[in-house]
Image (cartoon, rainbow, N blue to C red):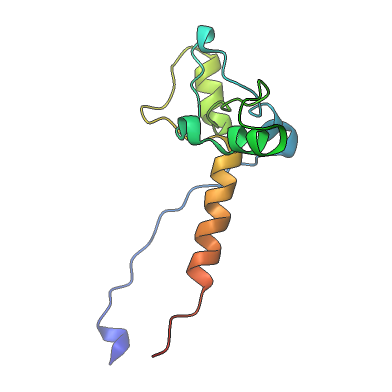
Length: 113
């Protein structure tokens, strides 16, 4: 009976882009705003800034906000002068932190009362 409740539908999928560590490393620096790069969507709450402040103290001059992370196709568009995505993204560090947090949170077993 359950099989008749749902229609069979073809779902379109897209290829996941290949992102290497060397590619990600290009985004582990402050943005060069003079060429149009943007800072991490988390701003002053960027993980890169936080880590530097924990390591070197809150008044350190080594703390910075990373530039937003762009997928390879988005980066190619940016380099070709076609602009950035309309919505600012998180940096590599903040993105990875959020992904790990969401994955761990989703795998927690529900509370049993």
